[in-house]
Image (cartoon, rainbow, N blue to C red; front, side):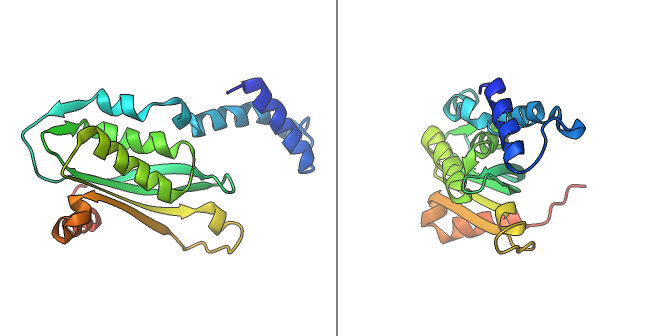
Length: 190
């Protein structure tokens, strides 16, 4: 990202909405905004394939593996406003697993881009299916969208739930139901 160009665009945008970019409180805003957007869109600079491939391990396991309640923060591609919530990822390996922290990082790589929740959910599931070739993958995202909460219909208590079920998570009601029950079970951790 061209930091200087982003700062210039931010200054112009401030003028367009009726602000004075030379006002004391806004003097460093263009620099802050450029840095914030660089962070919020860092997923474009990261490689999901390389991330997964760097942490695949051979194991003799065929039981369901779940990481739940992964916080996600993304930007709606329609209004460029945040949406945020929780991502739950599960899979049943066939000889290969990925390092547990990589599941959270994978969610971040795809979330740190302009997104729609539906695509984000699918991207995470498909990346795991492609690289691990597991028996199945399930991804559920529950998120709140500021584009719906603070503008438009202004429904503050609404949330959106999306799911991507591949392989046995799609084909087997029992597998899918086990995953859904486990991600909604209250945690026994302190």
